[in-house]
Length: 461
Ligand code: EPZ
Image (tube, rainbow, N blue to C red; front, side, top):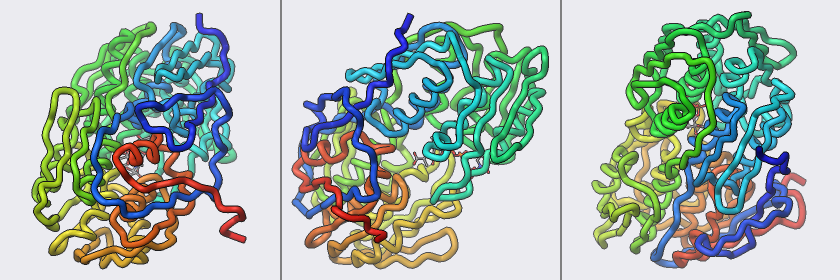
């Protein structure tokens, strides 16, 4: 039985390297829009960087813990991420016993769910909270979740999640900004569900609900992301009957209940890709620890075309810039296995320094070019036409004060600062804490001149 321990708040000591990082059970520094990152060009990156467990797998694993009353343990959890802590706090509010530990393991037990409501003040901070709906609906027959609202990259509706639950017999109603879902008396029923467009979250939410439904559910036009396969593998360890994950058709045969399990979260392919692009920009040789190239073929192709060397080395990946100039190339974001939208901003930063030009087309989100005006303030030459941007390489970028707008745009500006002349201040850097564990320490460990600070007064003032 897991004691009802408080969620371990963690904070990383400043300037610690990733290797020696110790998580401290103290209240994590409250993010503030006063937080900034100071970056100065400091030559090539050389050294080793440990890659964390995948944020976009871990968040769903935490939701899945509510599908059983048994103890569930996840290892390789990125426990220092703000999003993980926010979701862990939400689970705790619902009565789940939670313990996030310094060694990256998380232990959960949902044997006494006391609430099936996800309140607005938590959901607005972290939209992935809507993924508690599937497990609550399946296990408790009821879920009330605040509509997450849009975010800076798009409106992010959840209509396909709700249509999936309706197909399984749930009644759905909107009530004062909350969506209320109620399962039929006898529980959710298996169904044939064809998603009108590929959706990672809808696939995961409905797949979790289907594990405890009566009968078989078939998800067609399902998302194929590696994080979905990792979720399916964990659910199968809990006793779920799932097949086809990783393809566009997933079949789930409902079972009466699920049991506990222990599961290691897969490596974060977006963090891996982010550091690959960092080395492409700065040059040098970096070994990315405990990750793989398998899920990044859509990035590795364009990087190799741009003259970057990437090799697997057992459980690690070695990135090396082979001295030849970076060459521009075109990319278009698509659902997996296409080019990941979460790497689009980072890749665009690299293109700003390439010989020739490159085109970036964003097909997943309607507003994911907010890093463009900030990069242009640093001297980048980028023209946007609809959902495409033409980037013409420039000889150099110039340091400037810029504003982060979302998680991946934040890191793209830091990458630009690593090669810009002079100093770059990236404001509102708290976005980073949602998705990158100890980015400062990891970059410093490879020789980067990056530090974090907090402005004395509010920028808005
Ligand atoms: C997940 O978001 C990721 N987040 C995103 O990562 C990632 O960019 C996205 O998948 C695409 O890969 C997490 O896993 C927590 P979608 P999700 O449902 O599930 C539309 C990051 O930086 N749509 O695949 O919300 C939607 O508006 C974040 O780590 C509907 O129209 O993405 C979008 O245009 C950003 N109706 C498209 O589908 C729905 O019901 C794909 O969204 C659901 C989605």
